[in-house]
Image 1 (cartoon, rainbow, N blue to C red):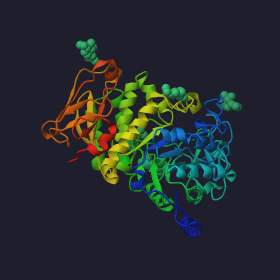
Image 2: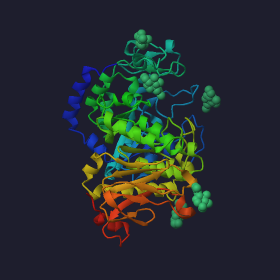
Image 3: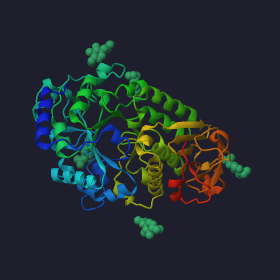
Image 4: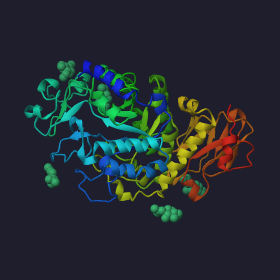
Length: 500
Ligand SMILES: *[C@@H]1O[C@H](CO)[C@@H](O)[C@H](O)[C@H]1NC(C)=O
Ligand SMILES: *[C@@H]1O[C@H](CO)[C@@H](O)[C@H](O)[C@H]1NC(C)=O
Ligand SMILES: *[C@@H]1O[C@H](CO)[C@@H](O)[C@H](O)[C@H]1NC(C)=O
Ligand SMILES: *[C@@H]1O[C@H](CO)[C@@H](O)[C@H](O)[C@H]1NC(C)=O
Ligand SMILES: *[C@@H]1O[C@H](CO)[C@@H](O)[C@H](O)[C@H]1NC(C)=O
């Protein structure tokens, strides 16, 4: 696989014709939060709500998505990641149709099920008008064919993919052998994913034509790292790669060749923690390792679930409290938060494909508890990050102030966040935080309950157990220092922050 020399030449020409893009750097992406959408499942052109087979096209389009940007921005998100846009195989396969977009067969054409080139341009423009950013999902590792590996009709692909020599030989992946992971085919059963050997300029073209601000690179661990590095250079925008693995040293290898990777090691740990299967010590240990091993954890993309993984609500059942704590952690820990569409409506599909529900089932209810809650978290994030210099908030790493079996306290900038993993049953235990940057003697305020606590020596304070059923259900608190503890209106906090 290789990014052909012609790419650089073509890139140069495009630069001459179109001028530099307004591409966003990693440092700019670090300040954003991302909402992930499967285009086919998010919204239809006319707002209708068709029934559909979960393995088929359901009717979502780029126009439909554009019409729902109020919904996404209303929750506070600043960027949207859309599923792959290129032309896919049309056939009904053993696994159904290519509604998800990961079975490309022509990188030079768009998938007509999602709209026209003008529709995609219009979505991009609409996002930029709102000062939001567009991230596009790109697959360079493979194309798809609905024929057995030995019978793939290569002539069906456009040049330079129209010959067998552009691809690796079919073989099954041995996951213990990285060369095999990179060269063998992701699937050899129908429809096989035909492993591409050489790249072309189609992605650079996409970035320029549709004014793409960032790329989510699918199956990055299946692409040799030197080609990832060439890809990153050629596209010239922020790239976050998918390297699905629980190991920190394994995923770390992808930051460098690419700007960023999905934070899979953190994901494994946070799922276990917030579902109550392990303690906060375990999560804290992973956070510490990541801080030491990655060159910059603040540009990694963090998530609770996605189109490949069971939704959080499928793991925690009826327990909204666990969802709230998990999403609070997501929004305030180091790294870029990515929320998978439907989390805010408590969609509870487990494994693929049932975790790709049509969004219209929710009626886009902006009154949903988690919708409102996430919007509030964005307000607090905004408050915390503008109280001090914004870039210093987003370049600082979150500090773990302490853990217990039931709680974790984090400090980022002027904000202390206490999350718990006890769920809806609550706890009667308080949590002693031994030290923080809060001034001894000051009063701090819980941004959710508006209750206050006094800060002791070294910034120590006690996070109380929540009293009463209603508050017990929200066994976490966000705390900001307050100037004199008298005025508890959140607005006051902006000028009342004492940071040392
Ligand atoms: C597609 O194929 C699946 C199984 O191979 C079959 O169950 C389904 O009915 C087919 N759908 C259509 C619309 O042809
Ligand atoms: C690893 O995979 C590569 C590519 O398939 C293969 O050529 C090589 O023999 C494998 N190495 C081992 C030790 O199995
Ligand atoms: C992570 O990578 C290691 C080493 O390559 C491999 O043994 C393991 O199976 C991988 N884990 C997953 C979930 O793929
Ligand atoms: C949301 O709640 C408000 C106030 O309770 C109500 O007026 C509005 O109709 C609700 N909207 C929806 C979509 O349920
Ligand atoms: C908290 O204390 C109350 C009153 O003693 C008790 O009823 C409740 O079960 C306790 N809750 C937990 C989670 O221990």
